[in-house]
Length: 341
Image 1 (tube, rainbow, N blue to C red):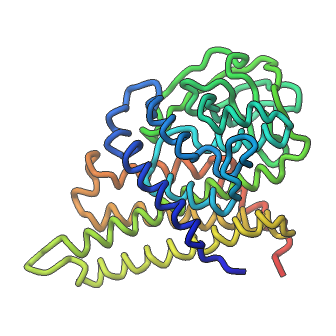
Image 2 (cartoon, helix red, strand yellow):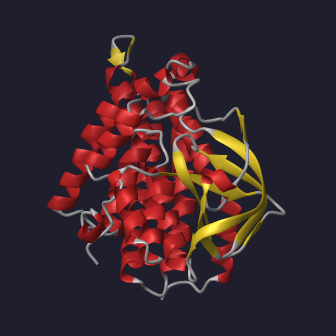
């Protein structure tokens, strides 16, 4: 199995990088702190216009006829740029709508005319193919028409207006808006009988964002180590810095390799898809968390300041750790899964 991106896949990743740097930079993220929506409508439409919301959808609904490997590279860049916005929920909702037979909704999602919030059930909440009941955490609901609940046993879309009033509260990540909502029997708009394929796709895409964070932290540290001078020499000549950068590079490469392998196995529908996807998230989170923390240390005093971007990497990594599954959830599942032969 060749895991190296093709020239076309590399071009897709480069185009995404260029657009995200222009429309969803960390400077723009900071400028919208305090706003209800972390992403301006213009920036969201620019991303939709470039096909970022429909990369893995068929051309019949406005997609690009690509697959999970291409979406994985896109979400790696979203993580690398700590880009705000409900990309994950909206992209996954497009796949759900298509699988459920609602091509019209899939087309609207691809075009960026519909946004989707992300719902995470809290303990005691109930999700069936017909209704939602209980308390849910909700993310990035501003401007959304639907909300997505996705887990190993459930994949549903519900109209946001059916949920009830949302109570916003401060988020650890300034690029994500979070709140809670108490739901009393909200009807499900669309549901999948078998959510397993969509759930594994979601795990891979979350892992891709974590890998992007690990790569970004590595690059920040290496660049600083080459350019920061102390006593007339770059600080990178010191073993304490050199070894830390090398460890970050190894961690990022390990996570990146597992991510690409997981994307390929899930795209092919292999028997070990769940094992590889869950392993990808465990390895990616470990790399993202450790690299993000290490880059703060490499940068010394400036690494601790709110003006520097390193803390954004730390906060996004911690936020993604519990998205769709936690580290402990994945480790527990991996223990029960047969190891690939």
